[in-house]
Image 1 (cartoon, rainbow, N blue to C red):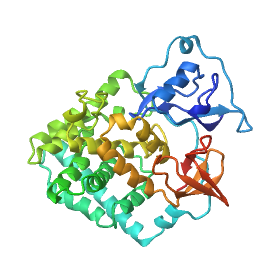
Image 2 (spheres, one colour):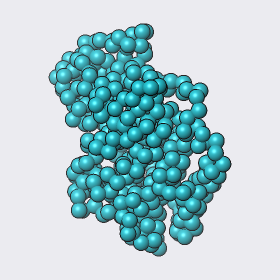
Image 3 (cartoon, helix red, strand yellow):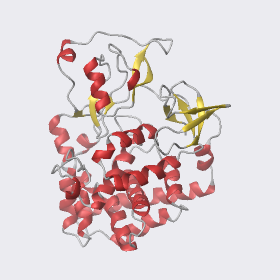
Image 4 (cartoon, rainbow, N blue to C red):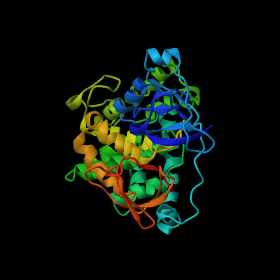
Length: 390
């Protein structure tokens, strides 16, 4: 069955979901094949879900309608952490050259790419020696490797450009850890302009080591493609405890172990393991939480394709303002959205356009040029960006 992306504001009862729908916390809200009810549509809005895919007929436009089951009529679906294969294939990218294609072919990207992958290989070796052989972490060496990646970029915006080109690596530990280290470094620089070199190093290392506890999670759970059971999800959640236990007795700044423990805490108390609120969470844990979420949502995963960055930014603008520290979040989003200037995008109208201007009042709604037409997505509420063409 074909699927078409539609804004949540335009959903109607009895439409059928074409894909699983996830919350910002990587938890399943409703599975594919769900017949929408008024209550489910309202739940999507409350969870700041901007758009979903619905089943359509062969014409690619007419929604398929179904009848909700008795269970759907009586109660909302539970929110559970799941993993599942995406039920659709991404459309073939345009053959036209675009910003990211040009960047990928540049010498500077090739050099960045080589240093990045070398650093990932070294990181794998380091993590394995630490966990399997109980070796101390040589923080100066792994930090110098991260700095060698940073040195291949001109500034924070350029790092974000480079990381966007690196999307497509489905790696829940090593590539993700390096991405989070780089993003944490970016956020530290733009949100804390007076941060010392020593503190920035600690923050970068905290981002690099935040998920080391996943080395203790069995692969059949960590890499499972099917839906996780509640007990399996609880096993996943223990990675923060394992990470803290691995790091706290090492010769490292204690803030690094604290970040490993607290990067899934949220300012509204909805996180884990302690349900901490606001000031109970350390500044570096708040920063790594933003970097971790942004990278996880905009990257491919075993159970889903990468989410469109503009949808992720929209989620942060809506739900993120209570879950994440605004003092760190907003400067990062303002910089992150700049990385998508001049990129080609596919709109929900199926038109191909180019992002030409950012709406600072609503970062997820830029101005897109299609031929000689300019769509201001802040005003054209029925149109949105379906995906980045990269």
